[in-house]
Length: 115
Image (tube, rainbow, N blue to C red; front, side, top):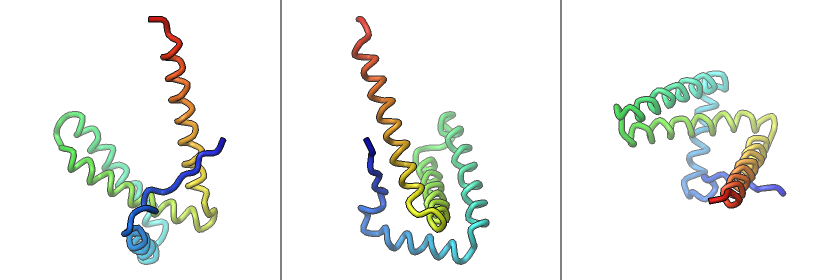
């Protein structure tokens, strides 16, 4: 069984504009700089998640860092797509299917446990 992945932005009417802005950023700063920015934003998200669990920041701060990481992850995926079109989406589909199977297995285990 193959699970098809449809990027969430494909349903967003502003997705084309957002992708165009991300392409412009890649053109302006280049792949290496955007990879480094993706690392920086990922590190900031890690820090904010820790602060969130300690109740030092709220959900808006957390959501802001998630948005930054998603923007940068999308740009990294765009870079990968230049050499390997569809690879990231294909792997997401594979990994979501694997997650679905794990969840089904977990549910099956719960259903067969004696009470």
